[in-house]
Length: 327
Image (cartoon, rainbow, N blue to C red):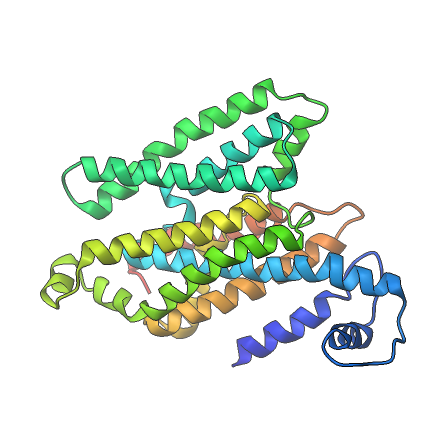
């Protein structure tokens, strides 16, 4: 409940941050005017800034933060490893190559998002196919397959940067890889929302099964859980929401690694509570970071830089706690 209130307050305050100052009261009246008949006391420019520039960006920040955090805690529960992040199966590397390829071909913003999404799914599909061909522990082989697929896509990304035009294309590729919500529009947001919402709903509905998986593969099977089917459902859902998030925001690291641990400290390892709290915490965190990116300097700071500045010290802290047990 507290997190929900914090998210609502932060949502309203976020409209006031930016180069064009707008008071929170005007923001509330503008938002309500699209639902109820209210006499206009604000300018048309204020309405344009709120509804066409800041609203889609704020919604995207909450959605991407919540998605990455939810995917992170789901993968950590699936692989029973606290150091797993949403890009463990090669999503980010595949999406990075797809976006760079589209930029190299002078594609539009929409084609860049589509290309990033398709290559993210391709990278995960290859990782999954490799893990099925290798006998042994399915969880371990899947993690190793994800680690194996990332370097080839990283090499292809380097090739794209090497042949890109250093004046226009190379800066665009570099900026995309650092992550940003500056160019988010309603069109991309709507198309990305569909797979994200579907994936979120499924994960939330089956959240109690993560507790069964946490007991071990054999124990879960003894309780009647089809672990292979459950593992496939979780991977598909996490891949959908991660790939959809990356395609509209670029690569934003550390959210899916750090926020699940903060949430675990708050509510413990019970996934029935952990998944919803991680979702809310991720939305609050990325919205807060995005507000800092908009106002901290005269030129907007790529959001991936600030998440890394916060995430790296916490990752080092996690390494120090690794031998003391998880949660």
